[in-house]
Image (cartoon, rainbow, N blue to C red; front, side, top):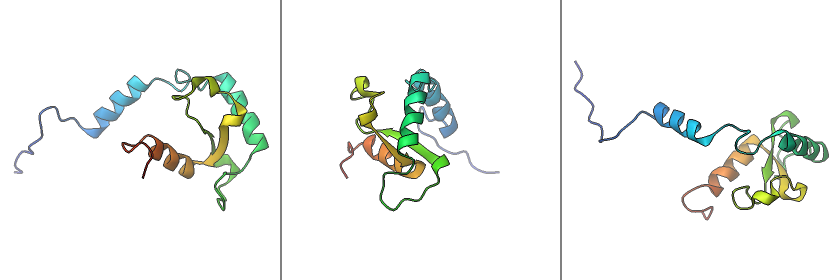
Length: 107
């Protein structure tokens, strides 16, 4: 028989934390990714079908449209075509992680 595992007070499994985070976050539509966004996104990808990172050869079906200035910082630029750039999923995730990290994107 294995000894019990000591856990700090208030400890919860990762899965429970993730479920709570997702529930509080809201749906994509609630976060501003509505039909207007889908139209702007499609038009942007038609004009810019490749990742903006030099040398990236990610296929066109795996691209994201990134807000240069985040919607949190400037909601009025959410649908502004000059505030968008095409990034592959990998580069977009790296950028988002860096921008939302504890060091404020410095590092």
